[in-house]
Picture 1: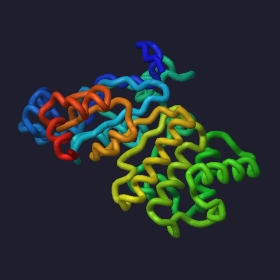
Picture 2: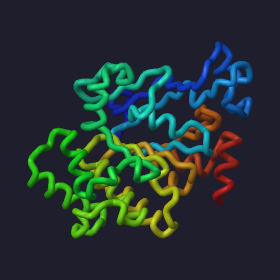
Picture 3: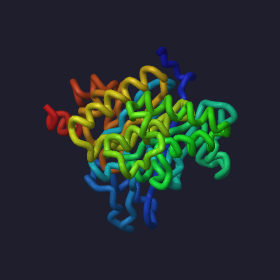
Length: 282
């Protein structure tokens, strides 16, 4: 797909999140140069600062970095799981064109989440209601997006479970009785139930057996190609980034230190930290 400066889906400008009391130097005196995200004057934690990027329709963007680099914080703010501190996020879909969605009302934010976004968390318990059946979890997302016909919901849930290779016989089973890999598949079904243009994946294979990881990654890649969903994939694992993403942002101490086409970053990393990351998987 041709990317020009106008056809972006999501634009992030100056996104910043600070915990604690910051002062004028908190951003200046933290980051990769200081190898710390803790302000030496106030002890405020700069989770991420001045994050800027665009995401295009159908593109898969990776955000990679070690634990504490700020990568999950970005996704949690974009999905409204976490209050932002500063910055703007624009979503190129009606009726939100030209509006900073971070400043929208809670009602609008819920509508954006229900209709335009999906999220797959590292821990399925964060994305699934364990009191509902697997079909009930998918139904919950469909109902929030305005689908109320029981027969249609059940058909859609069946179809989604088939798509994600969950046995349809288990439509009425509780996720607690599923393996970790199966729970992730149900969570993916729920996240894509409303055909969102944007899906967030936050460390989705962490904690799964290696053989299960590969199957879940294959599934995500197939769904992305079939449905053309734009994705933001957060991982500390470069092999996940290599398999799924077109472009990558590399983060350290709450800042983006390098960004570019995933292949380029893996073959010719420029920043010393990226070089370290890449050499660790070779």
